[in-house]
Image (cartoon, rainbow, N blue to C red):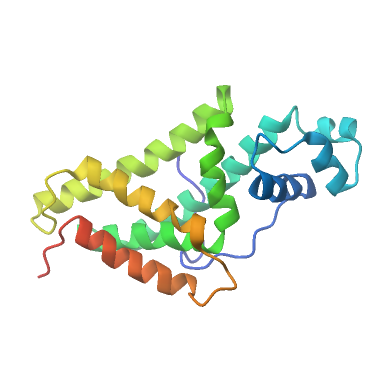
Length: 203
């Protein structure tokens, strides 16, 4: 499951979505998945409900499409960041955390949808879980390699990796693009926190 590399993993173009998915994202972020109706989405797009169902089988299919897009963005940026980081575990770790934090800060609404993943079933859920597991495994492997190389000292690479990913995901709950913090500043601070969490041993 390798994503298409991006030209620069620190660059995140404005989000481009088809009108139906844009409306779905707006409604779910504003009201939550359960409170969002297909009729409301159709009204925002300016189409009939049958016309909307021509493109998507149901509301869950719209959520699955949005989460597929979200995972494609973050995975492609992580892959490119790791390709550029070389073999040093500390550099790999910092690049991966920075890429994830930049994604969440640039696309907080899209990242917020992670909280609605419980609504997925079937193939949509399987795809999402596969993406999430791949990212978690890569981070855990980096932490384990760093411990083996004595650049990290955490006694719990698996738990530490999960906690760090949850911390990064939490940016979506408070970050505002029109606030005082630039995405790069947020990412830089979170990389420092994450390095402290794995007990980075400076050389």
